[in-house]
Length: 310
Image 1 (cartoon, one colour):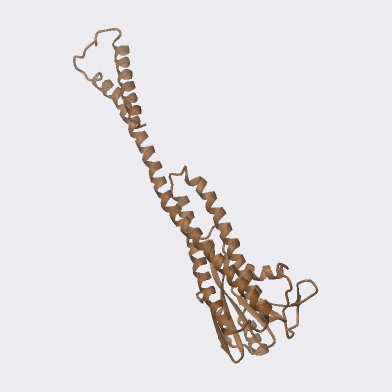
Image 2 (tube, rainbow, N blue to C red):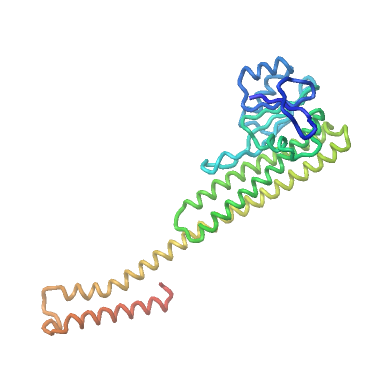
């Protein structure tokens, strides 16, 4: 799908015709749409296809005056997935007349820009728009990390009384997501440092200041993600021990109950044998046997309780 945007009085507006100074946004484009864009804008094919490779890492490239920037942006695939949050490549192509973005999925990065969350948004200022994309990417990482923290807190409450592995496996899914986030943020940070050294954003002083904000925001996102990943890793180890301890407590209780019940059972088994037994001719034999059984069971129960085995 190809969508074209240009600057309007309030934010951006969608248009149908391709004009110089516009932003061309492609989401999972068809082969015909890629070929048409190659013909119209004269963009190298490998630049357009690079962002559609889900294994592509963050990098920059330049060919015939056209610059390619690939980011790793966060994407929410759904709670039911094995890994709810992952990172996907997001391509930015700078040409003399157009800004092109391309991605396999409808990411929140483009939605944040189109939702008027960024001030002074202009499709004609390509370097400024790229920096704003980098900034909302770092902010989106922070937002998703907070979502993961909230989800893990909810799982933590269930884990304290759990004897099953479902909650630990759910935490493992979020831990994998944080690993993806850490890797993506590190590669983005290296890529942005190369952009800073290249002088791509040194034309305007405002762009240099915005680039510093982007690097700071990305570093903050990386630090928060690393902290959350470390906490979650330690939490999983702790709760694995808690689940094992809860199971041991249950087994200890069941074993103690079995010992208490086995005393009356032993006496009843003895008096059930077809041999001469004490008090078998007495009318009170049943009550005497029951009384002795309950007394011994009570004594065993007190001993186990005083030893804290119950």
